[in-house]
Image (cartoon, rainbow over the protein chains, first blue to last red):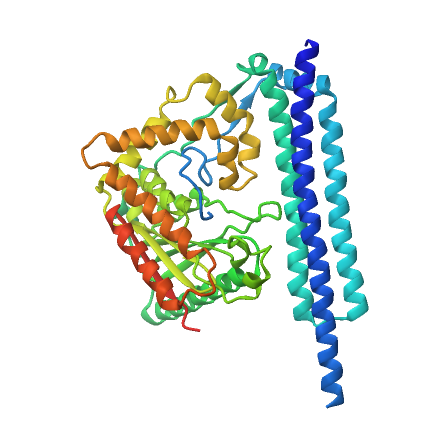
Length: 55
Length: 411
């Protein structure tokens, strides 16, 4: 395999790798949002419980 | 079995292509991977990233649960969403892994072109079994039979209700096959494995068995889970919203024709159903002599001809075979784009043979567009508007020889 071929194949591999990393990064962002959302929902539920107890 | 699929003959459901690989192919494949060196390193890197995300999700979930002690309902709801992200991580890495492999192998395509052979992908028709022979009834005493039938009907209703619950709660499709003979029900499940969360296979061999045992009616029932609705994971509005009908997908429709081609006259015994969170869809070929059905079968026969695909195309197909059985049909097209183009061209040619033939193809495309429209979440769309699109679907189905009906659940 000549140098040019090696270069091309490495570029191809890099591109696929980068694409997947970006997709994973997006999933991470989604997960971060989900974490905040879960906390917010838990907070809401907690307040609701306290309010019910007070009543 | 999801919305938005294009017909991809030869890679449907249980009819998975098998690959015969010789040592030379394996050896060359290994050599190629070793030459680049980089591939495994990159896969391992992606694996690490995915694992990190999955671990973070799991840890954060446990931490929040511990700190807030939420209700079991709230906890279960979010657990499902975190699990879904974890599965998507795995899918992305699997896709990239395969892409990396294809990327490397394609580069050396000339070296492996003769390394693998694609087996004929289509199943063998059960021509030897005749309906008349199958319809012998089993003698039973009156009261005994009534009791068995009643129990069967109850069990059937219960299973349908369970499938509905699954469509609401689970993030994977489920398949159930029922056979009725003299009012007696038999059930076979096709529950998905963890790694195949988005689609399901129909075990034709199980149906063959039911037919051989004298079934008078067979139902192939699968779910369309609410979580598979486009945008579900990313749009809280959808997740928290009221489910909408999820009609049959393109694959569901073309599968009817595959079944007709496979089961021949016994296909009369088979009915397909889709259970979504809102109701039950029934699908059946109403006119096997409809131009669309006939042409589609002609096309299937063309594809079954060993000369239809070139050696290179078969080779490309074989290289993807492992992947094909592990990914959703939607993604298969992505990997098989060269075959898809050829198939689409053939599809158009086939329907252009007769004057006015294209109208059948257009109706098929229109039907799929209508189905996709139903699954596009629109909070402003009223129930009546949705029903009107469903009725359009039903009418369009008739033009291509397919009977579609939708029955909403009562509560």
